[in-house]
Image 1 (cartoon, rainbow, N blue to C red):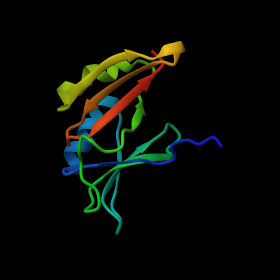
Image 2 (cartoon, rainbow, N blue to C red):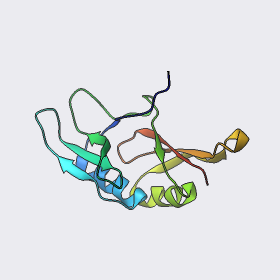
Image 3 (tube, one colour):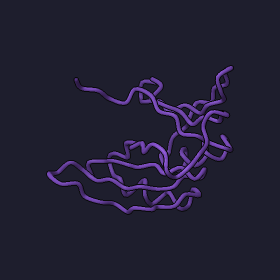
Image 4 (cartoon, rainbow, N blue to C red):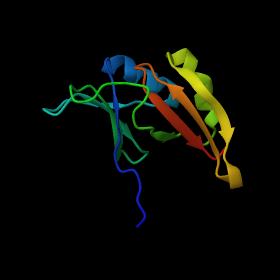
Length: 122
C-alpha cells in the first residue's frame, strides 16, 4: 500500500511567533483559523488546499525529540536554509545529498524548539 502525508501539525507555544518564522523562511502567508479544537496557522498549496498547521493546543508541546516532518523546500533547499537563522531558528544538520539522486535534506530547530526537516531536489 502506498501512502502520503495528508496533514501535519507542528506544536507552537507562541502561534504568532511560529507563524512569522515559517512565513519568513518559506516566503509565504499562513491562514489563521480558530476552532474549538485549537488555534492554528494553516499551510496551503498554490490551489488553497490545506496541508497542515502550526497548532497551539494543550495536547501537544514543542520539542526536539518528537516526530520528524519533512517539508518541501523546493526548488532550492539552500534558499530556505539561508533564511532559518534570521527568522529565529537554527540549522542543526546542513544540506546533505541523498544517494541515487533522491535530492537533498537538512534539519533545523524552529522558533518553538521543534526539530523539523527539509527536502528538495536541488
